[in-house]
Picture (spheres, one colour):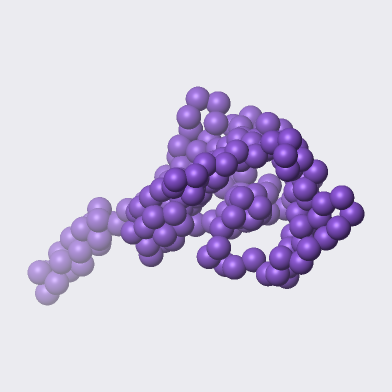
Length: 193
């Protein structure tokens, strides 16, 4: 009987020693959670962005203004001069390209078909709901890496976002496909409502 009574307190001590306490959250993780909450609550945003699209043997650079009211995202190219004024209107269902009063239906966006036009909505959706793999504070910015929780690093689509640590504005975004950076966005300005 004594052996059984001694065994119970010893088991309790061992289990208590082996049980980890509550996981400690780093300052970067706390900031990432706070920013995610803000982006989930925001209904609208505007930005001026420089986009580099890398197709492997061809690299294109664009500058555009963008705005979203939650239902529609409007992107207007401002550079290079040869495409200045072309506007894309994107909704959950479809996208329309407009230029000089004419519009062309482009159809629904393919879930796997990333284009420079769809890059900004992808980055915003990632800020709101992407699976966070890692985050770190880098000088004045917070870097958040997102990807497939079941995936292998370097395979499939991975997204990195950089936020101003003070204002929480988006300052940079990158989208990689199978480890190769296909889209880089530098935000010249960004505001959310």
